[in-house]
Length: 231
Image 1 (spheres, one colour):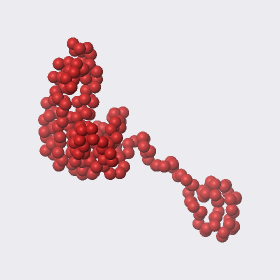
Image 2 (tube, rainbow, N blue to C red):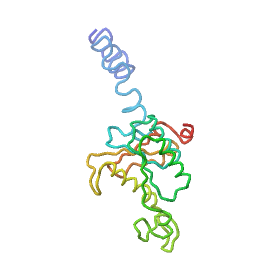
Image 3 (spheres, one colour):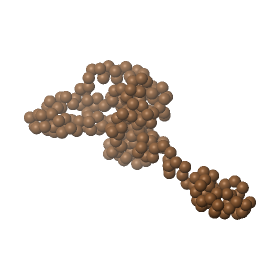
Image 4 (cartoon, one colour):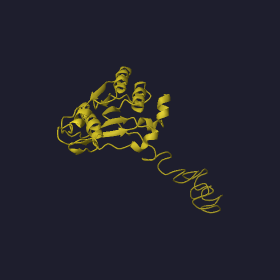
């Protein structure tokens, strides 16, 4: 019935108790608007994670996709999963920042890993970090050591990760994107995949460059380091 044969806004509770606004029928013989709850049935806006509770993959398309490869357990598994199509879409390349002072096992493993991947692995470097440190200089040749060692010039600052890892990867990403030195990326975006697992979430950081967007596929897969080893 229309507005009768039940009750209009009464004989139950108004705005709750099942239907929105009436507990009988309002204008239809079914329900008006919703038959469950009005507005939310669990959480408002999302039922899983919203932005920070967990990590959401980059939405939308990227112009380029690369893997930041450290050649450890997690980043190696990330690269191999991408090679097998278990993480998509296929990245264009992996980038390994070589300090030229890595353990020999790392280079042996990297030689093997390159043969397993259908995409290229670029090895980039800002020079020999050991030689620079022993000379009391940085990659620019100035008396500024980027590792906290005691030298004749004093104690160095811990800036080696940026200078010998992040910066050379950033330069290669710009090259892959086709950008010249100091050229603005404008609307171009590169998605950089980083091999951080679920038990390392405290290491997650957004990119400082507006044209590079970080993605953490192992977090999306809910994989920790042991899961990577089992894989």
